[in-house]
Amino acid sequence: MVVKSCYEYDVILDAREDRCPMPLLKTKMALNKMASGDCLCVMTEDAGSLKDIPHYFTIVGHTLLNQEEKNGLFTFIVQKK
Image (cartoon, rainbow, N blue to C red; front, side, top):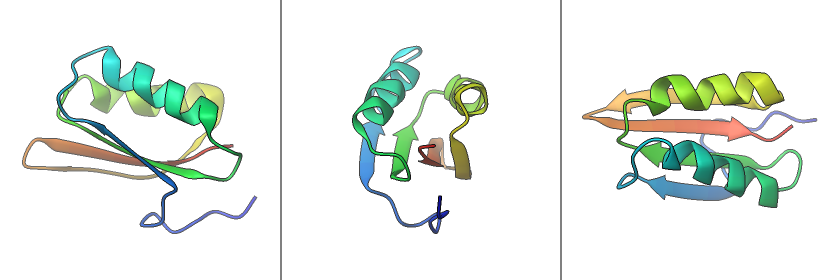
C-alpha cells in the first residue's frame, strides 16, 4: 500500500458538533464505506477523541498520518488499511 501525503484525503468527516462517542462511531462508519488505501480527515471538538480515535486506529491497523489541535479543533488524518 502506498502511504499518501497527510494533506491528501478522499473523505472529510465534520464531527465538530458531536460529543463522545459520536465522533468515533462516525469515524468507524466512514471507514467502513471507504476502500483500502483511502484517506479520511476527521474534525472534532470533543476532547475525548484525542484518546479514542488514535486508539481505535491502533487496534484495527489503520495508519494515523497526522494529528493536530488548533484552537480547540482536533484533526486526524488516517489511511485505511
